[in-house]
Length: 212
Image (cartoon, rainbow, N blue to C red; front, side, top):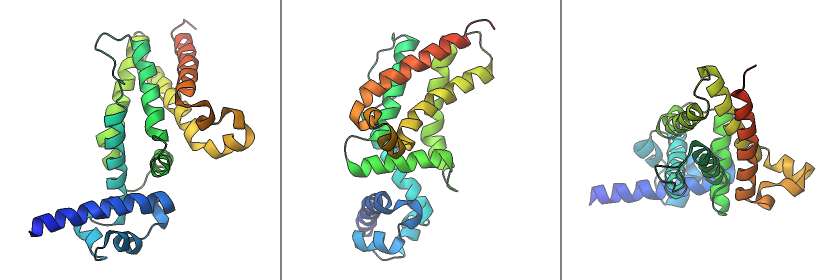
């Protein structure tokens, strides 16, 4: 009975934290509000997660687990897909994972995740090891196939360019809405933006493969 109760409390805390962090951010959300929404004692966060910061990371990992299941890196491509096809699938997957599925809570969690890429929290390495590093290795593998003769630094710079473009459309969302509303991500749609980022990246990657 106690184990079931503990499990139920932990699940309620995670669900409540998901909403509170989406509403207020990782720093402004309070343990008191999370526990009040979950119907739990304020000590429950420390007991189940080891503190608010680790609870925040647990929320991001749950968000990424769900997003990865829905939008895997390969996006359903078969084993014979070309590296170009896999690069476009990677970009589509990343944009969908950042933008969410229209759910405002998911959209906000995607923004919080993007912010962690720029200014990581103390425990973000947990998320990096479980999600970011494996996905990045997949991208590096694709780029090595596209640029078989390139040195490692070039491959990593190309990977940074691909990911950076995707993060730009998400992180600079409000600025883009204000200055260039016609190219706002939600107006163009993920598919159109993914196609643009892919074609832009492909042109740059091809250029990097040419002799200087």
